Image (cartoon, rainbow, N blue to C red; front, side, top):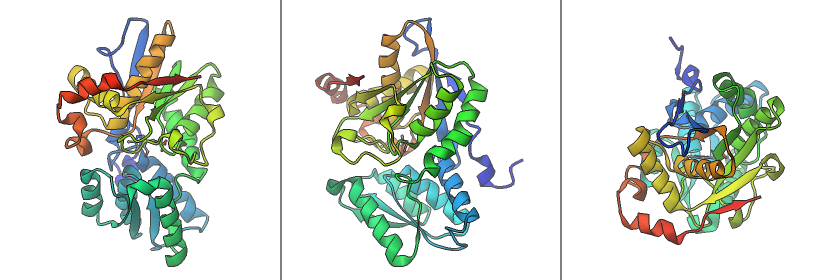
Length: 311
Ligand SMILES: Cc1ncc(COP(=O)(O)O)c(C=O)c1O
C-alpha cells in the first residue's frame, strides 16, 4: 500500500519484445516509463528535483514553480507540484500537441504559450524571466545537474536490478538527462555497455525530443558519454509506435517509436546482445496524432527520409 502518489513513482516494469527481435541472438527489452503516475519518466526527475530544492531551501513552502517544457515535464510538475502545495506555471511552445495542452489545463497549471518558431530556447528564456519577475522557483531540467543525478541514483540502479547483464541502452534525446544519468551508471558498472540515443530530424514533430542540429545543445548533455546517436525521421518513429502496438500490444509514445527504430539500427551492427530501450511515455496522449491516424501516406513518406547513424 502506497502512502501517496509520490510513492508510486518508479519501479516500472521491463518487458521483452520477442516479436520485434530481428533474430534469435538479439534480445530486445523495454522499460515502460509510461506507467508512472502522470504517465511519463518525468515524474522521476520532477519529484527528485523538487525534493532536493526543498531540502536545501531553494524551494520554499507554497512558492510558485515555473518551467519551460514541451509537455511531459509540465504534466509531471502540474500533478506533483500541486500535491506538494505549489502553484505551477509552464511555458509551452504553441505547437505542443492539443492533448498535452488539454492535460495541463485539466491539471490546472497556468500556461504561457510561446511561438514554436522561436524554439525551446525562447521558452527557456521566458521561463527564466518569469522566475526572476515573480520570484518563482525555476525547475531548470535543461540546466540542472539534479536531472541526470536523479537517473544516476534511482532509475539506473532500478534497471540494473531488473536486467543486470545488458549490452546496450537506447533512449530518446530531450534534455539529455536520461542518457547522461543512466548511461554513466551503466558504464561504471560495465564499461562495455553501449549508450545510444535516438535523435529526431530537425523540424520533427516528436514530442519531448530535441534535434541537436537545431542548435542549443542542452548544458547537461555531454556527447562524450554516448557511443552513437541515431537520427530518426518522424515517419519512422510513427511506424515504430504502430509496430509496437500491432506486434507487441504496447501503446507507446512517439519517442518510443524512435527509440525502437534506433535499437533496430543498432542491432544491425552487432552479432548478438541484450538491448534495453527506455520508453519515456505511453501512447494515450498521441491517439489524435498522425502516428495513430493510420494514414497510409506516412508509410510512403518514410521512404523519403534518411535516417543517419553517426560515429
Ligand atoms: C516523450 C519523451 N521522450 C523522451 C524525452 C527525452 O528525455 P530526456 O529529457 O531525459 O533527454 C522526453 C523529455 O522531455 C520526453 O518527454
